[in-house]
Image 1 (cartoon, rainbow, N blue to C red):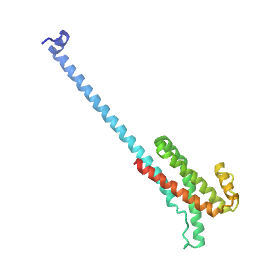
Image 2 (image 1 turned 90 degrees about the horizontal axis):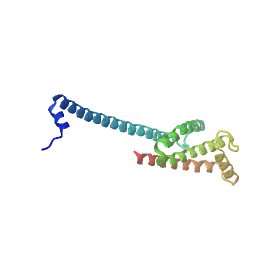
Image 3 (image 1 turned 45 degrees about the vertical axis):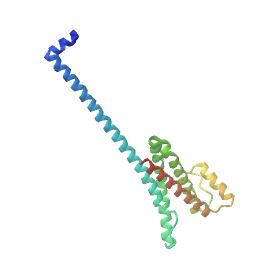
Image 4 (image 1 turned 90 degrees about the vertical axis):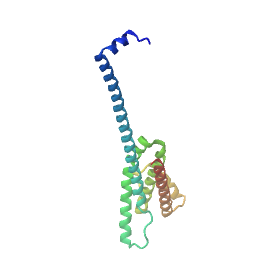
Length: 188
């Protein structure tokens, strides 16, 4: 069997053989280290996405837990306090919506962004109708998207009552939250 001269010199020199073995072992260790780092990165990425998804689910649950239909058995004062509490809870959800939308757009793109947008739009509409219900005047001009205000004004001038708008919006909000939860659970 023919062995090239350069290979023969390497194989006859124990230091060269040790260097070659050490180089191979170093390459294997480098590959193992790269693989471990890559697996850790993937694990952290999955863990991060799961935490963000749980934050979206928690937000949707918070909205769902704010009951939209008052309990008739409550006294008037309790009902008013419950309405104020409900409005405050939705306001908090409305402010959290900005961060939730950012999370959805950066991490889940198409899977959840449409559902998150639907929930946010329904929260805006619900808050505006609630404000109108409390003040008994046309919807407030500040703090809400112009399209929401225009839609509500148009529907009121067409003859819909505030209570009917409120009930419709509560149903739409509940449905959009349910759709968001279904979409989030599909990703999990």
